[in-house]
Image (cartoon, rainbow, N blue to C red; front, side):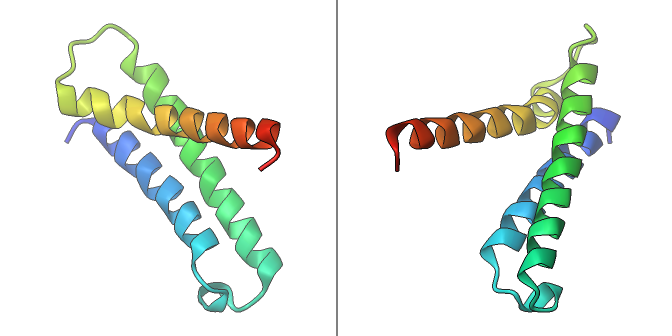
Length: 94
């Protein structure tokens, strides 16, 4: 498996894990709300760093197939779309 695919899949995993930690009840982390927030933010941070690394490595001019390009570039695009949605919701006051 290509290293860009691995980075992309790891980024998707950590971003999804952060989303899952925020959506689940408090039981998986011990019932402490602050700990849930810290774990979710750490997962988001690791996922974002991996997405940035995969995106920058995918832009080096090597020939990549469609699956590898998607897995390397999609996590950063999803993060950007999510930030845009939250920004628009904040601007609209919702």
